[in-house]
Image (cartoon, rainbow, N blue to C red; front, side):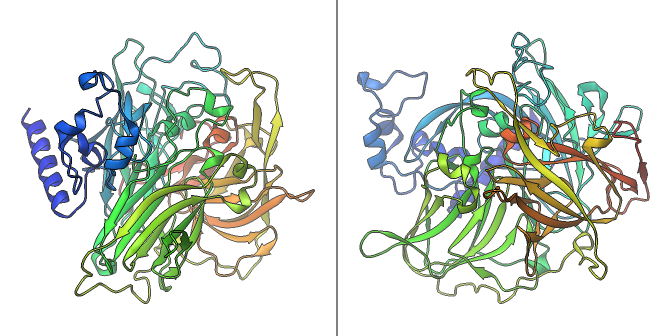
Length: 612
């Protein structure tokens, strides 16, 4: 109880501090009207309860919720997700996964059934420094899997929707070990519940729910190397067969690696924008049909952010979507004198993508930017007085995705008040330098490219529960094989460089994502890319006529041997087979050890066995 009281006091103290800074915590921002704490709202909790009973309450005086009244009088203030301590081995941070009805407030007010972390969408934010570790106890409090359903129960059929309540964690963007440790001390990949003692970024591990209605749990220990680049990343489940359904339900949160003091850009506000497509009550449907076109920011529908003229902000965008509708072009727009919105001509400058800063370069002005599902982008923002919005527009090259996506305002920005007397400046160059694992490639000698294709094929069967014929999504004309036999695995050497040419034989774009190691895109559709930058997710253009789309990437496999995956980050495609294993063979840093450890382990399986 003492620990709980201390945590409560710390939470209350943090909330108080956030309110003084004008930043609302996640629960306060979305539910402020229930407590009467709505800055500038002028409506008490009692008066608002006349209009907004909770799901299990009867409206006072028999009134139904008049949404027109809510839209007129209630504007949801832009909130930030709650933060959580990184934990220690003795007292890990707890991420509890459970089912819950969540309320999404703002312009469009609705309730959705959700699987979520710690009762909120998005989950809490972790903030840490290079060289630190994250210790997490993942608690699976979901209901038992539906074993009566041959399509969605467990173990189910590989490369089909299944095991919706089995889960795990992926630390997307982290350059860390992809392995686990068995009870006997062996370094292993994958396994279930008690087969594994503790995991790093091992997405092949599976935590089943309790069969008796209780909960199960599993520890994670993720050690950042001392030289890890600072940046914006995120965590989400990665259980093959249920990844999409869980991410769509809201299971995602931010991972922020802070800049070292010498390289820190001083800003007035550092704000997260976690973009999600929350679709509740949809088990199975999401794999078959168009089910939603409403996107949220930090769990809110079209919130309003109020800042001051000349206030310098850092905006960290995370595209935490899972369907083709998640392809988007972010547009930063200002309302003109005619009342129409136009793209800005100044004030928004990109400084990083996928958690890696453009070191030594000038911040790049951008009135818009394309984001594939899983991409991140950081901007420095400094605006003049006026009314602005961030628009989710169509992604021009996604083609098929645009058929089921319409433009939507993600958030409104009011720039008002007295300008800052001594405003902070946007730096002429982005401070810092690339760490060793992002060192320049030696391109003096040509490197032959591996050719890998992303394909689709119609299969017999049904797509639960609609009865539609499903599509088989493939890599190299094969669906994902968890056993990873030689023909369905990429074997690479530790610390080696490789060039891969990724070909898209389909009419839709597929965002390629590989775990552990980022890459540079050096060609798109055969055209060289000048001054390539680092990504961990990049879309492969769709087929045009008889010509396949393609990108060519260059990457290296530094420091961490083991087994992990690459896949399409339209997660409904990944669950349906568009994924492949990677074996990094050789000797390197084991899981749950700091980068400076003298401990080493060797991974050299004959195929992709789970035992070292």
